[in-house]
Length: 187
Image (tube, rainbow, N blue to C red; front, side):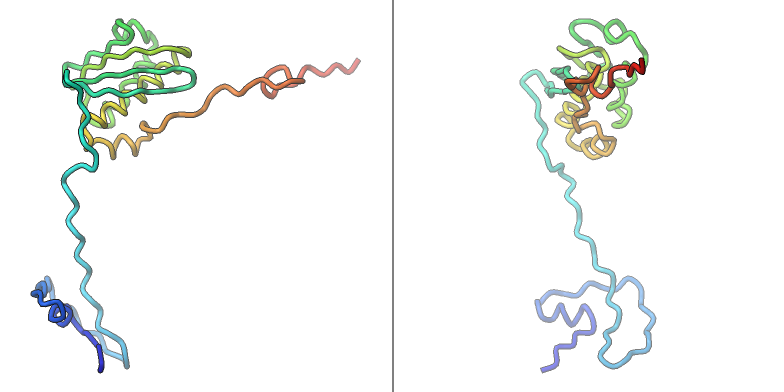
């Protein structure tokens, strides 16, 4: 028995379903022995509109996440609001006086197009100011994706969900620092 199927309607006959109509007729190419006609492009299955992850909100309507960078650990809560960011009970302009550090902690909102839409309450411990700003950024990114799971793709593409594992290298014996040798004395 020859099982040569030439079109989608032949295949639909096997399953008992109706064949989808072709959008545009294809130009017929000269056939060689045993060659099949080019098949229509496969139809992509519809993507689910529902996010893969569930929204994680506490009883107060906030999303919580922990951010880490170097030796700093930040506990971050976000909720819809006017865009006020409070760190250890102080405003962000007071706690992070350098504009570059404030720019770092606002990056996740810029990537997600949510500037000024969420209030952030954060407590951060350990490390220096740069590490603390990185920890707050990591925590805000994690909390943002828990409040709005649909934002996970752009925030992850920007690399904000990954903990930056770079840290200070330990000092080695026989060296002045981690890699620096003692100064060589010729005489």
